[in-house]
Image (cartoon, chains in turn brown, purple):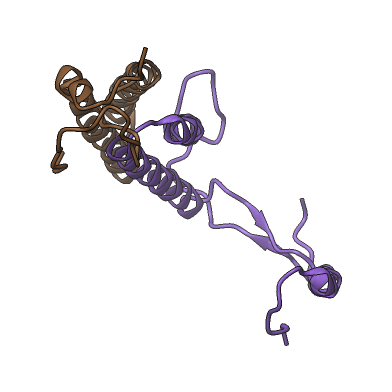
Amino acid sequence: MQQVQTPQPQNAVMPVPPQVITVKDSNYLKDQLSWELLAMKKCRHFAQECTDPEIVQMIDKAGQMHQRHYMLLLKHLQNNNTEEMKKVPQPQQ
Amino acid sequence: MSPNPTSQTIQNPKPANEPQVKGPEMNDRDRVNDILALEKYLTDSFNISAREASHSYLHQDIMTILNETHQCQYELFELMFRKGHYKLEAEQQQTLDQAYQQFNGYSTQFPYQTQTLQ
């Protein structure tokens, strides 16, 4: 995010992986978002059914955590892969 | 299950409102247990996601989620323990001492120089 990018010579070595969402990242992100969505729904549903106020509070707290995690993961799907890929030196043909 | 004089059991009393005779319907304990299982499953899954992430910001966020999910899982365990849903058993002192002797003895196999344990 805060990386300052200078134009790369064609034979530049990348010291770290670029801020690109790979196919694998994307597949995992979609899975993770599905887990979090199901988790938050389940927590809310169960909390509504519980009688002990302490249990209700704890389960709702877990549900809210899953909702926060969902938003944290979702922002990675807003990655500008097109821009990021322009900075990546392509292997010589 | 009779309490013996040298009891090694660690358990809180069960809550008074818990149904004595349990039917097929889900109760509070079943629900909190199910959420605990859910969090345990998520820590496993996020652990795999974390080690497969490519760039560092993604990795950091997944590590945050992994850590918070672990904390949540442990808080649920603590709640259940408080409510008397977990019975723990202390290890016998003799067994603990024997294991200490055994594994302390293995320090002769350490490949690095360290200060020896007292």
